[in-house]
Length: 123
Length: 503
Image (tube, rainbow over all chains, first blue to last red; front, side, top):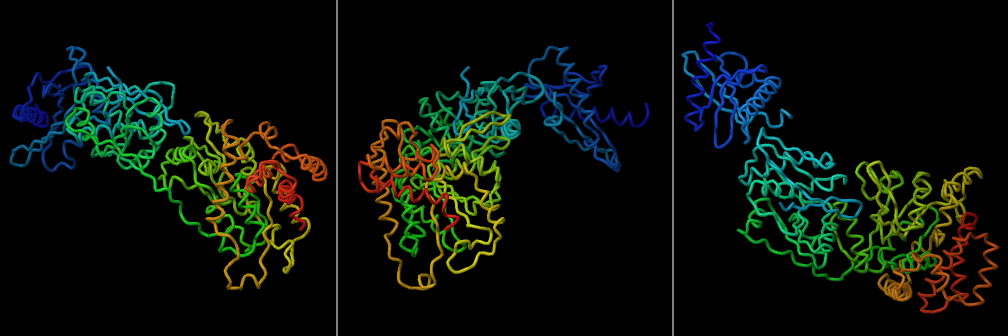
């Protein structure tokens, strides 16, 4: 596995641990669809959360959360729709972004942005 | 599920809007259907933030239906019912029973001032509903007698009230002082102009239109402003009419007994005066309803605007039709128009020479079209005062505004007694048919009128207007019959229509 993929999956593992600490119940990981992929599917306070994890080493120009553009958001919403259709989930759901920054020594900083699609993606 | 009730404005009338909310699972979104305008559509951001401020986090897909579906909804006053509707759908509040909610929401949950509180309160009164209004509108809603109103300061407060945790206090009715503002200028402060003052008294008594012509600086504007001080106070019904229009525009109620006095500048657009615009607002002529519309420098107004005034002057209402609908606004005004006799302003002046060419004068005077001339009741020439009169320090020798107002009120009482059974309050608004039948014109006055009608080439409308003025003069006199004296005075004010320019 090349370096950036390794970093990415390490970030996802780290995000899972952090989310569980925050009370998220991880349901599944790396759900693949034709339209794209959902990194983490979790349940939090009766709501389904689709978490997109972004990991960046420090020094890269833009912070990890800024690398999710409108196109990616639309894609995530689409994947979310397919997922709830397949599983028959009828409650509310949302899309979160977990941003992880890795510094030179390899220690990770975790930040969570909840419900990022509000006002940006119209169904 | 019981819907939450809000209102939207249609003309000066409020219409009930049922706000239905359904929340289903899914990605968060709010969609509003039922012909919302931009302000209503943008409400979702305000509503969500306001609900979050009171600790309610809206989740899932929210569908809001504003019924009836074919009535266009406008303005931010639907924010509050939508927010309460969502809270009800989330099970966080009991839906209010027989109540109208209105108000714009701030992001922190405060309730902001709304337009149209008075029309909504009138609707609530008619339907025997309670009404919840923004705290800033407390002054207006307290003027509507008998309505059960509550003032709301924030969304949290209202939700607590609906849950039964906290009771809001009912708004108390406004206690009138019955005082009218002081006349400024007072008639007793105006020197000379006896004829013009008399004309103003007649105009105030019968709600007749006045046309003043005079040289620059002769006091036309001052005289028009003095009219304010002699107009009778508004009756309950009239005050409500005026209040409805002010509230529709979001203007403060002011002194509710004072008749409106609107001065319109000659650069005003037709829409500003007649009403209209993309979301249909009443114009100056409706704001002057039951009061005075003063058009200074009448000849400078756009032709199109002056002609647009014709129909409302006759009917007392203006129908504004646009693609977004057609509404009727009341517009029963006392029109006061003032202008110079010629472009330089000194035609007919005893001292200064007029420097205008004959064609320039003709062009100037042609601006005032026949139909408008026909709709004015009293023509007054306002001559410049002589230097001796202007310089003299003696106070003007004439009755003050308060006395004149008493006479005007007495004349109005007589008119009301006569016309009340048909639903009219003053001579100017009585239709021709009823007027002619109940005028009590004396025999010799009738023969005199027949003679003069031929001489002055009066139109049918012109004659009716003269008869109305004559009736008012007789009322001021306290006489039950219109005699030849009253009629000839009325004719003298009318004669000005053709003679003034030449005098």
